[in-house]
Length: 123
Image 1 (tube, one colour):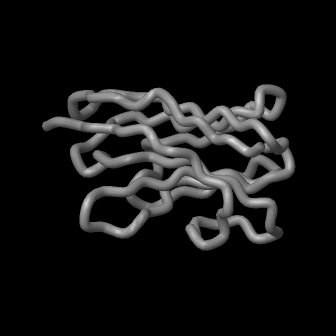
Image 2 (cartoon, rainbow, N blue to C red):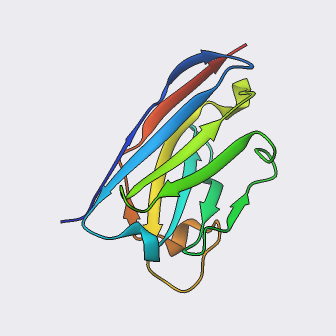
């Protein structure tokens, strides 16, 4: 059974940092495209960062230079280090996995999703 379990969310002041984790069971993330998305009320789910099986990352323009995606294949765990947080980074953050050949920040590509972890950034 596939499970993706996010953790590490919380409340932080602007300028602060958080590190999100996503523990995966049921498949090996080493061969998967893995990503972080976020969602806020009234907005579509937004791709934040993605990393392919060759450990090549890509980021949304809004988080470049502030967020870092990484993964530990031995632990089947995906991470998102978030620095210099802004109030507009507030949202529910989801990790996602895809076994398909394409790997970019399109939500429709991903068929495995976690339940999300809330991030709140206050000004």
